[in-house]
Amino acid sequence: MFEFTIRRLLSGLVLLLVVTCGSFFLAHLAVGDPTPGLLGNNATPAQQAALRQQLGLDRPLPVQFWDWFSHALRGDFGTSWRSFQPVSEQIALRVPVTLSVVLAATFLAAALGLVIGVVAGQRPGGLLDRCLKLASVVLFALPGFWVSLVLVLWFAVQLRWFPAVGYVSPDESVLGWLRSITLPAVSLSLTAIVLVAEQLRNGLLEVGGQDFVRTLRARGLPERRVALHVLRNASPAALTVLALMFVGLLGGAVVVEVVFNLPGIGSLTQSASQIGDIPTLLGLTAVTVVFVVVVNFLLDLVLGWVNPKVREK
View (cartoon, rainbow, N blue to C red):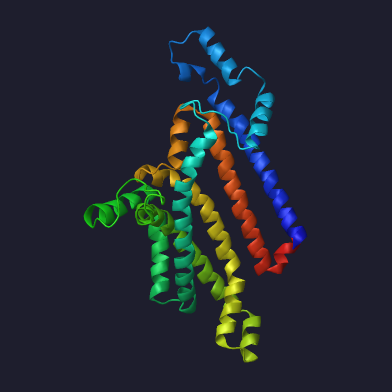
């Protein structure tokens, strides 16, 4: 298990290096010279040259990358070209907002997906199983922003159970914080719930028909213990989908944060993209990749514990 953990940790570090390096060069090639956009069309060539020198853009790209990467390792992502504030401070203020919504959505997907998947797997062809298949078709056909707007109109405007927009910090009010993230989390989690439930349901049906399950029952093992063995062998696919959905939810947070007016990294990404704020975009990319690496690393550890054969890969 120790060697397996080290291999997965090293592969995650390599992924982090490759993605950040590729993002740096692609961002600079895509944006090109940002000085006209930062200074305006009336800026003189001398003013543009002075700003390029101030931002360090007059140096070769490999030198710029090493300077950025060496500082990023210490948590310093530079200064925003839009607000002229440290990128690290902006991200630190917005990460808790996005993580609150994404973790709440992941928890909903795991809890409800587990319950629905187990019940549907025990009663294939039943009412819940048919509803699950219908929900998978409907939810994948509906745009995410439309679902968010429907939730706002129904639960915020008509029923007034939750606020329509805005975010409340848990330091101010725990209840207000829960109310402010409920609708965004539900909006993000609906598709994830269906995917997790489907994977678990299919896994239970597949594992439940294998020979070792019939052997366990023939030996007189209690049905509860048999069900636990089946669930353990059917869970890897659902866990993988859940981890992938966590990564997808980070991307989907952009739309949800715009609809619900949440000050998270999604809205920061949108505003930074509009003006080509490369330091902010690179900082957001690095933080997102760290989240992805950590989630995949934890997933590999769980799968290695659930299925020892995974450790041999």
